[in-house]
Length: 248
Image 1 (tube, rainbow, N blue to C red):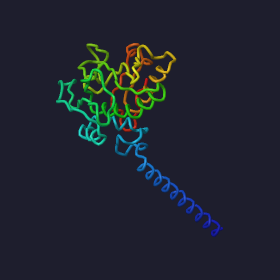
Image 2 (spheres, helix red, strand yellow):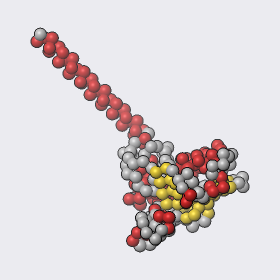
Image 3 (cartoon, rainbow, N blue to C red):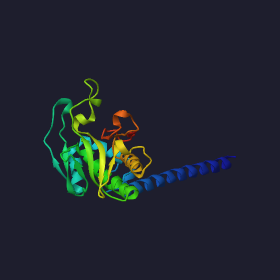
């Protein structure tokens, strides 16, 4: 009996050792894979040259706490911009506003051209141009987006322009409202006019809205409410390391 019991214990120990060895191998492989595919892991550093991954939006949101890191990412990606002096006071104080300049890695212009969102918004807009707008415009419309028409970014106001309540992300320039897209072939895709019409233009709008949800902490579209019937609202609310973006 003692010998049989001892053999059983040895088998149990060997089984546990094999289980721990398997777990260690899985963890080692996972770490190796993440180091070689940094976009899939929450702990790796953001690089705008990497593909968009499940935690890209979280890393972009966190840039709001480190403006120097944010501008360094833009510099590494050859995004040209003009850093603006601090704007506003108290709830409307913004010290990381930058004006994206056409040229370098950016091909799309903005209208009006003096828009200056926060650095994390510009970083996400750059990725949106490269990873979403460019391929989806070619795929669905057979042309390139050359201009983004917008309703502005920095605006010292509360949500929906109310006199009371929480402050809008626009109050610190941490948001931008997109109204339309001009194409190289002369056409314009307008959110109010083309949303939900069952056309290639409306399919493009849904596709680029969905792609923005991987890059911005908040994405609001005409599907959200009547106040957004004519524009997309993108903001870079920090959702934390593992938080989910709001996409409506």
